[in-house]
Image (cartoon, rainbow, N blue to C red; front, side, top):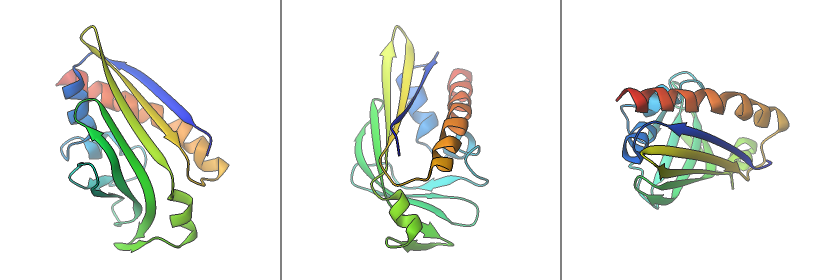
Length: 149
């Protein structure tokens, strides 16, 4: 997949933005635009496994590659999960494998510049188009929640 970068300026502290991005209370809300019932099963700690699931317990398996609280999160795709069963060898798993999502939060005069960069993986062009369409909507929701807290 080509590298894709999204930026949004949020009138809230990096801590508030981080809490919107990476807590069970908010994650399902801002990721709902990606799929129905979206949620994450992880402790968000560096080196931990992360399951990104829909309401059918299907989705992507990742590992928290790097985590610096309130500043940076990198999640590496390593496989897929279908109806609760992990798979690392299927075509879907190979599509996710090697993908990277990086979240950078920078404090700028009391506001937060949130940058999300997507790279790697073997996603088809229609998936890249989907990401380009949906990520801005997700980040608008992050902004709304963070500025409302």
